[in-house]
Length: 175
Image (cartoon, rainbow, N blue to C red; front, side, top):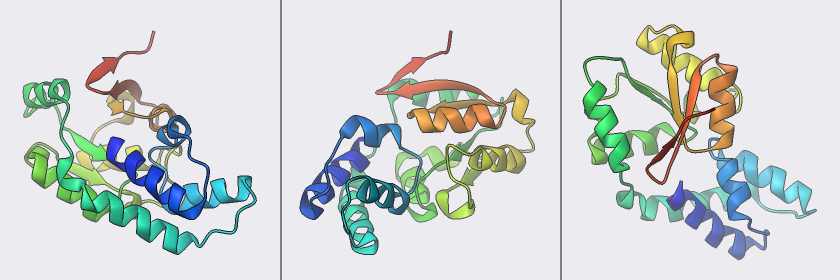
């Protein structure tokens, strides 16, 4: 998410769109094109959605090799590998998600990947996580979702799954 937000900040400045890091972080999991359309409408701006999206994605991709797995998450993944099925449900494109999984080494641990390209109804809708559970052959009620945004937590809950907020390497369990 931090790399996405950095790309958002620069692109928003270039296109004259007000930037609110906290709000955009909260929208993580929603495709860029949908977010910029919403924000442009809110601010009464006429923005070329395709040009904005291409620029934001280009800035993100230019830094994608900097993505790292939080150490706590790495330890959890390694400790559960082979004991529990694990998958990824992301608002990123399949191409970017696969690249990140390969370069971080997570691809070897994940049995499923559902990206923004694979669902029609993105987060906060449950479709992404329900498809991950289906690919893993898992009962959604027995799944645990680790998310880094409120939108993702909403999607996990809507799927009938337990959720944990995992950001900046910290795990925050619901009360």
